Image (tube, rainbow, N blue to C red; front, side, top):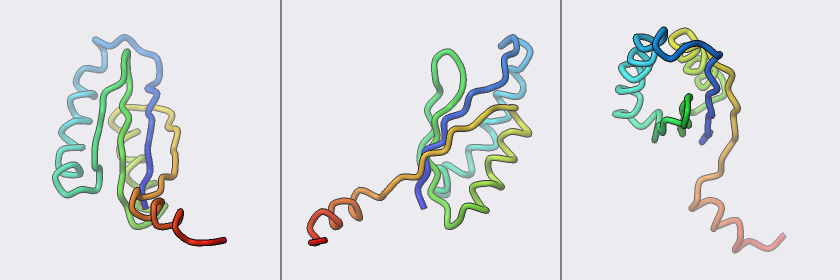
Length: 94
């Protein structure tokens, strides 16, 4: 299951959370390496947009809880459809 996750960190001085932001990237590294997190793009001025590929809502919840422990944030979660599946759906008749 694909999800786009947009984080909006709680308002704090950026200089006070540098260690937490670095910890986020260390945490994300293995998820990016194994494909659980397909991409992660920093937002301007703050936050991250990440694409997760997970087998269940429960696994996504577990990852977002871990993320929020590192960098407290609100998350917008957008379910996505795989491009191949979306294209195939267009060829089927209703």
